[in-house]
Length: 477
Ligand SMILES: NC(=O)C1=CN([C@@H]2O[C@H](COP(=O)(O)OP(=O)(O)OC[C@H]3O[C@@H](n4cnc5c(N)ncnc54)[C@H](OP(=O)(O)O)[C@@H]3O)[C@@H](O)[C@H]2O)[C@@H](O)CC1
Ligand SMILES: Nc1ncnc2c1ncn2[C@@H]1O[C@H](COP(=O)(O)OP(=O)(O)O)[C@@H](O)[C@H]1O
Ligand SMILES: [K+]
Image 1 (spheres, helix red, strand yellow):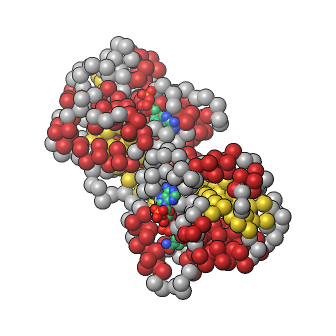
Image 2: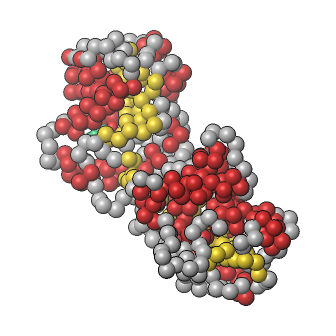
Image 3: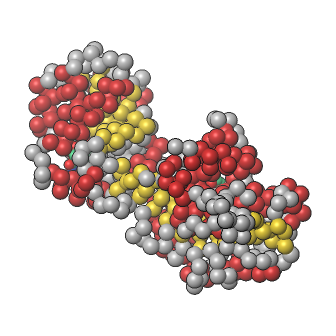
């Protein structure tokens, strides 16, 4: 599991650690890791032209100490001081002593730089870059230099991944001690480039339960339901799908396609697209209306392509886990969901989430973490918020939110969400808890899209077909 923490938690852990080590030791550890990472990105350090963008806080201190280390190895290092009177005092002294120069003309040094270290703001920054920093940041980005963010790209909100003003887009980020939540969530994540974590000894001082977590291959491998010798199709779990309409029969087919590859032993389909489903998937069990007469299932999926058709209330009235997606989410009553005894999993995209909360779509996309938590609280349900960063939150606010690390923008194709809902429903039926079912489904779905895509367009059914490959990949040590 990859863990990320809020700024408050990071600061508390840092304070605890700082009390046990000599003054300045943490910053030295950070700067040493940063300088080593930057050296690794350069063909050679000797003679390289390095520019530091230095703000008024400790983030600038990290940049200055790292700059001093690179200067001692023969790099030509210039510092652009955005707040000359407030630049980190000892860091600046060390930098000067190592032969670093304070730049008279920021734009002149940036024009010929090989690498720029962005030390304008770290976890103390808020509200986007300030006006005086904007032209310098733009010149850095517009140059041929590689931009390396110190701890995080300046201008992003470390806690939420929001970008409320202008932020510097880095090619790489060297972060200290632990991942900050914002590094893993769009739109901030788009600004980080590759993220490298430098160990400064913080780990033992961080709480064991993180604020945000991302599954890795080994976590997924442990959660995937694998049939035992005595398993049969019913014991593996049966998932029911209520989806599709005369207008959108394809959504039913795609949801069933996902469900067939999610680990349940059988898929029952109930709805108006039975002919299309059975034509494509003879292994699906199709039933007439209503869902209650379809035979026992361990989880229901309702909503993809449903239009105005019935089904949502019928499955919410059951005592098994229910996944509600797409059209099923329209006007969904929070009380009806909260009243359920079995778990409910909602899988909105940004537009559907906005409608459920009565806000603009842009607000959802700009503030994904707040949105997914607000929806989970409002409905007392597990919520998977789809999109460029897929997040999953459980109804208990103490449970860490899960962020999916496998997403790819090739998934932005019609019908891929239907495959996801079938897949997640199947994992629910196989017995996974809603948070696990949702986050494992998102993980496999993203991985399947990557495997099927190889950087070329994929169709939703390609994603469904590649799920077994993703499954195998996740289980391969
Ligand atoms: N603590 C530790 O143990 C370790 C910490 N480490 C490092 O310290 C970093 C945190 O340092 P920090 O707390 O000094 O805050 P930091 O992000 O440098 O800057 C905040 C300053 O900037 C200002 N400012 C605010 N918003 C702004 C904006 N939009 N645009 C421009 N300026 C803005 C604001 O000042 P203001 O002008 O508001 O008075 C404030 O003073 C952390 O990210 C890591 O790199 C490592 O060395 C490892 C050990
Ligand atoms: N820019 C993106 N980057 C990564 N994944 C995306 C992006 N846009 C959409 N997706 C994913 O693609 C799927 C689209 O689902 P959805 O919006 O419900 O589409 P549909 O209703 O056509 O099936 C979701 O899994 C979502 O997370
Ligand atoms: K920074």
